[in-house]
Image 1 (tube, helix red, strand yellow):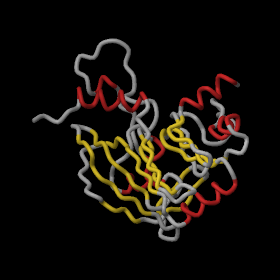
Image 2 (tube, helix red, strand yellow; image 1 turned 120 degrees about the vertical axis):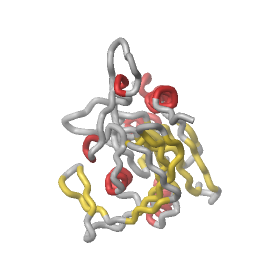
Image 3 (cartoon, helix red, strand yellow; image 1 turned 90 degrees about the vertical axis):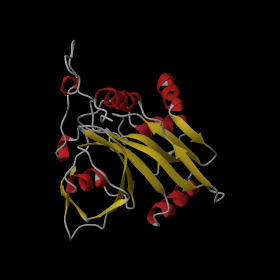
Length: 240
């Protein structure tokens, strides 16, 4: 367990007496998963680090990036109020299929749980809003900034699907797995997907600390997102 605690410590981006912000790697579940358990959960690791740790929000298992963890009851309550009042700013980066040009494009569509683990657009569902902005365009893909106003399950993924695009590798909502050979001509050697998960990363989170000062924390890309963008810039760049 000492090795796992050391691993968790390496993920920490910010730490004070009340909060930790970590850069969650992909494939680490926020909470313990039954059946498909492959890695000790983020919560379990956090409680090895500090027994009073509580997750203030969650990320999907495949989603990487910034997660805020409260270290005491008062801090958890403080953060919960900010989430309820929509005072927490979250920015995600996603690689989506196609050339998509959005400039602070708002998708305001209610979401409803369809079956366990899947969400659909439904006017009778919970109000849900996301802003999208194009960051970089490739020949077959776009690097997109996604800023959710609300925090519904799978919100970014479903709102992108509603705009006739999909996150690369997000097979649950219509995305595809693209192989390196589909971009790189005369590819030699072992072929592999551009990324082995859906390409979504919680890039930044901003909230008020217990003293009311604003903390803005940016989470660097994990290695798989770094490699993905490097490959796209090399083999999928738009011609001048």
